[in-house]
Each structure stands twice: as C-alpha cells, then as structure tokens.
Length: 90
Image (cartoon, rainbow, N blue to C red):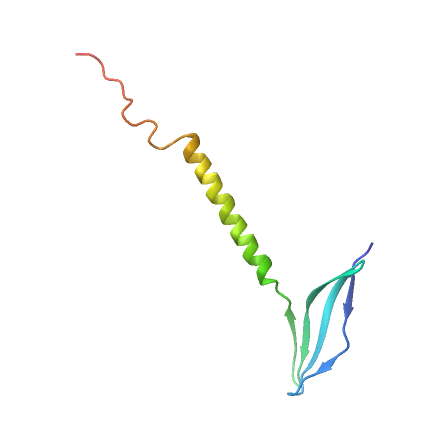
C-alpha cells in the first residue's frame, strides 16, 4: 500500500500566522511529519520530532555498548595475564 503525504486545513493563529500540518498516511495509520508556518514575510518548515524515540535509541545504544563491554571483560579479563610470567631457573 503506498504512503501518501496529506495536509490539514490551514489554521490562522492569533498573531496572523497560518499553520498547515502535514502527515504521512499508510493504510489506516498516520504519522505526523511537521507543519508549515506561513507569516507575512516568510514561510518555514518545522519538522515533527519524536523525542521519546530519540531517547529510546540513545538508551538502547548505551545498553548494547555496556553489554558488549561487560562481555569483553568477562570473556578475557584484563588481569588474566598478571603474574603468569615464567622465570627461568638460576
């Protein structure tokens, strides 16, 4: 099923700006993409950012790094070679 980009009806705010929301629709689900903010002298695109998803990716990356670090230390501990030098008899 193709994804479509749809726009909401324009909304005029109290300060005279016009806001037009955009969303990506896939089947029965819609995901916000961002909004166009149109003022008297300029137009600006403001993307929708999912801060929870960004935080989850950061936490998951840290968890994977900590797990791999622990596995590396447990598999070959840094102290494994200490005191195992063989000395030649005199």
